Image 1: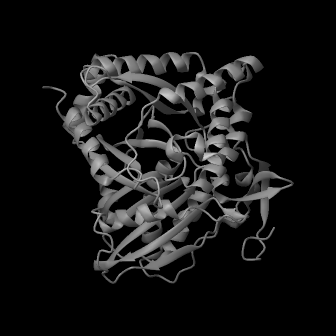
Image 2: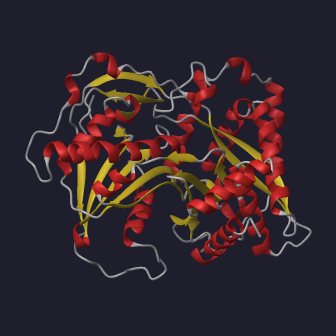
Image 3: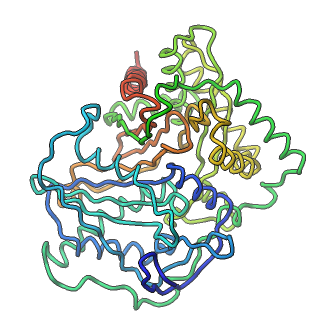
Length: 467
């Protein structure tokens, strides 16, 4: 098989994409679904140890070795037989003056934002996973991992990011920084590591749980369409200029995180319900809705790995998230925990009724329709909900000694939404006992000032739970 440069690459396995994976290809083309992990190091590293660490990860992740191809109108994953992946080196060691005064992020986070906006090639074939190494001022380095969301959901990207730090430390110790020793090549491993054991979400969905009549599909699609007319969004500020994905990060200390999780248990809420409730109260306050309130569309993403047949191990990279959309009425005056508990119960009941499986095709179809016909969304903004969030926060347990050894200053994982998506997407992780939430939004559709106002209000509510 030839890649985009006319070079041959060996294919070990191949399979057709499922409907959800194909839908994400359309979403990525629109500007949504490029997941980025950025790791900021306080040291300069060479690409050779990084290539070796990536090779170790790819030896057990066939989908991340894939190329997206198209054959007879059908999108496919072609799994490369090799675990070797080029690392693009980008030199930004010279300090550059700030070009955009509206971007107040640290320089490394601005690079992460730019990488979210870069997308993937339009021409096929192309790799679903790409790696870059930025050389930054003061001998710092920034590792960028680029994931096509059709091949790696948020949980996959978070896990690979954590694994890479561990393998990078091992490879740096093996090769030595700047060493010319040969990077380990795992191409000669036994063939069974290349077996494609990564089915599509639809192929692994239990048939009984996804059962739905033709008429029920039609009614639900109509229901989603009609409900969209009463869903409130954030006020659209600029629907003309080119859009970019931007991120604001909120961090909560260990004590505050412990209190948040303890109170969630006491109040019969989960973390998703609490975060959603805080975001809805924040937007209601921002818009001054008072006691009247508004109806908001809220989407949760549910990691379905353990619910599939056969169950997919958590260590397997792929897209195994299913969405549930609910209409939530929120006012400025509703008590936070009352709203959080109601949201939690609503989504728990939806999961119990298998809505994440039965409505999967309906939501994929509506997403594709909005991508191809932006005018069906308000002001062609392609905003389909106010909020999206993960039902379960990803856990990042990384040894502090490892972080010190690598001189890791910070890291982040988030996904673009400057194409189709919500007004605000939350990416929560529990990092070594501390809650950290990345808030991703579409700018200038929404200004940084507006989103920062919301994030500050959300953070204030979560930090004042005991008052």
